[in-house]
Length: 244
Image (cartoon, rainbow, N blue to C red; front, side):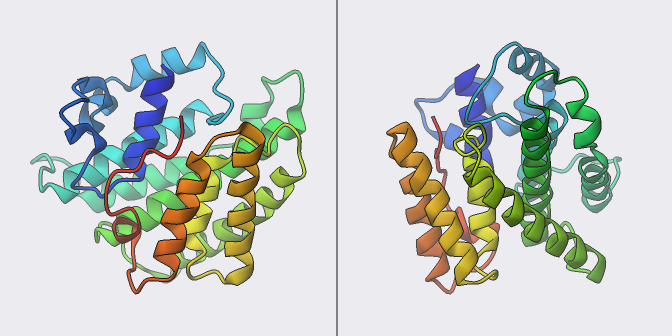
């Protein structure tokens, strides 16, 4: 199951028309964006049986990531199914569901460390909202309207604030690699202070866990920050597996 999680997140760090699963060494259809969506109930059931310290994402938000991956893939490959709602309508409905997710309700099931779990759910919620907006706007699925700009601004600031809190939490600080990378993408327009926070967070996780991949994420982000490229698929212009 851990490998499924790695590949699901890796697909979010890939250009929509390119997948890590195109590699001849990866032949399990469960990992493909479309098949992952079709097998989402199985994936969530398996995910619910274990705890993955680097990926403590609430089930409903993980479903959101799987759905975004599918939507990006279908639009980018011009494979949107006929006689269904438009990609924009599907994207708006998906974003509405992610925004309406209640971290407060989700944390009611937790008997220990409720405050940490609440902050974690809020962190992943804002990260998934930003992933949906940035990746789908880049493909032209969603407009850059005033309303969506306001949503992005709210969740950018909330995500940075929550990541600051995570850095001070023994429970949370090593569990936010994916939200940090999302924040890093947004930090190209967010200013030097936000970029510094992201680098410090990923570098700290690398030291704490004794792993290199968070530093690989820093390299990807720094290359994007100093480039003239713009947009999700221009930052993650090839498949990246940045967690293990």
